Image (cartoon, rainbow, N blue to C red; front, top):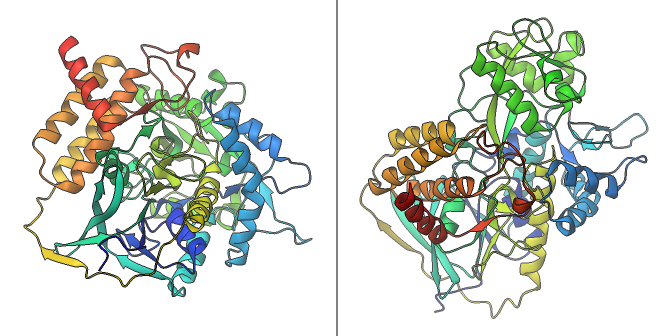
Length: 516
């Protein structure tokens, strides 16, 4: 019996993974989800919506131009033009799947604006419930689709590859069993890295493990230094931190400090509607100075808050805040990762048979700083392109599925304490503002954690953190989501994407250690 059947495995139960699985039907697909499918997915928490030029006064070119500006000089223009051009079709795909996007009285899609967008183009669901509504529709459809097999509460931790070609992967079930799944195609759709930071809007599953798994298989990673910190997470000591959507500022809410000063006017003429990295640094400065940062929605939204933004309202109520009358304390939080596994326009990685889409991939669409609501768009556009590319490949002769190898393995050491140490290191050394001495110290601590680790899942998280750290040290400028106080200006020398393998990062670490 063949040990390499025409099995397609998708690792990740979020928007990108589920949309890809549906686009691949009727080809049989196995989806591996670390939590019950749809849960533990950052997509479900996305509040604003999908960026798409669907209104009569907007164009694809406007969308492209706004993305190029937000991406701070290193967006792949061919990629974003393709993505923006595909937006309307993908939104209509989601409509057909049952996503109840908001419409106006004439039945047209209703759109709103977010920071750094020149036009209203955010397609929403009930103001701030787009992610949840999209995921509910996809989960329902996937569970009804016979070509999709779901393996839930299982963590993929090692790719099997030979001669730079994927043969399958190993997953671990919650009861400690390891399962070896042969495959011809593996799609990584595991999301981002937010949970590597102490304050994040991301669920625990967004720990960079899928990216690190690809890195350990030799895949080339890209733009790993670029982490977007959402300016306005609720500062209520929750983990993950609840998100106060950018749409609040789009509706006229102001940022103020304890003295009531609109401090963002000191940083950018666009004030609250400046690019996210600018707003995040402005808020970070106020918080670190002790002046505090608050979102004032009392006049712009006021008594309509509960109806217009029910998700944020519920978060506030849980923290004892009434946003119709009270200021909302906010803090920057690790939110979105522009880096990841390097892919081409169809989601191919540098390892044969390995594909990536969604936040785990680095397509070049975001450059140094993601334009708001381009993330859900990227997920569905590239998930569809991965599916189309796989479908066009020769599928070979259909074979029976081989016996799946299951074995009881020794207990994997708990890495909860080590993960907390890593999150502290990442926040201190590779957070909103970075500096060489702090980053060098942080990289040494990451390597020390790696030397004492024997958990394969945590090893993937550490691999992701290591490449991010080295990439941040290597880029001696500030651009987009990467800000260095010792190199506060951008440089034309660095106006390009960065690419690095895990092996490259370790060679660079050795050099840095020798010359430090």
